Image 1 (tube, rainbow, N blue to C red):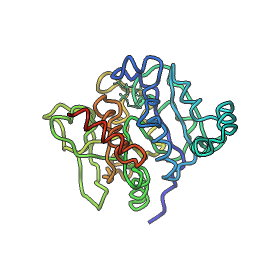
Image 2 (image 1 turned 180 degrees about the vertical axis):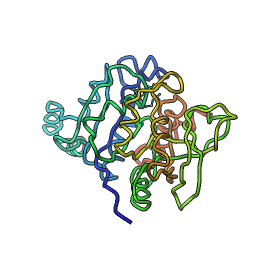
Image 3 (image 1 turned 30 degrees about the vertical axis):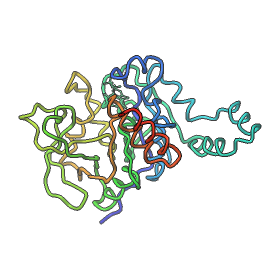
Image 4 (image 1 turned 30 degrees about the horizontal axis):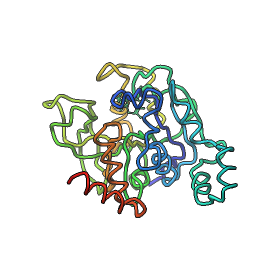
Length: 293
Ligand code: UTP
């Protein structure tokens, strides 16, 4: 088998309005809401880095400039930390910074949908495979979700790989749902894909979640700017048109997914990550004990 082209660039669509989190997201992008002490977007960047990503493209929108500041030096703060001998805090700030010249920003001038946001990154991605990470989906596991998907991508010889999760029938109308063929370890052949289907039209209970490895041929499909479910330009619709033209697989990972775009999912993520951290867990457990009586 020919080794597939390596995936070195990732797109982070962060231009959504985050209406489910208003008023918190009036002036603060939802991707900057914190799970314990880190913005959700930083978890996604760290996951991408672990998977071998070297270039990071953010598709931002109005009011999202603090995402740029977050991935830049904060000289005043850094020199204050240095002056006060706060070495660990300074080291952690510097450690989380992507290398100079590896971060790119482009704007989606109107939030016309996820497919449109990805299309806005076309000139920065060019003619190479790329990853897409939706920071709302926080993936927690020993090995990152995207790194596990890269394993599948390399094993099956490239093409499209989309992270997948089984969902109960009652929730399928909120997701992109796969029609599936053969299963090969963690990879499941995809034969069709439908965005937010009505219950009777869902081809399976296997749904797409916010991690993708995509080939540049997607941009020609996105160029059509067809509107799909909810009147938005959906990524799923363009992905579905690549099925049959290249290997296309759904991949299960062993990560736990938290939907941080949803209030309960976000609170759940804070509890789960907090309880997994030695520095937070004892105090958090005590607080929970008091709260639940
Ligand atoms: P969502 O649909 O969950 O984000 O999109 P939203 O529209 O901001 O959320 P609500 O429903 O109003 O609360 C998933 C991801 O796609 C990005 C979002 O920023 C999020 O990371 N997105 C969505 C864009 O970048 N542009 C869009 O036009 C839509």
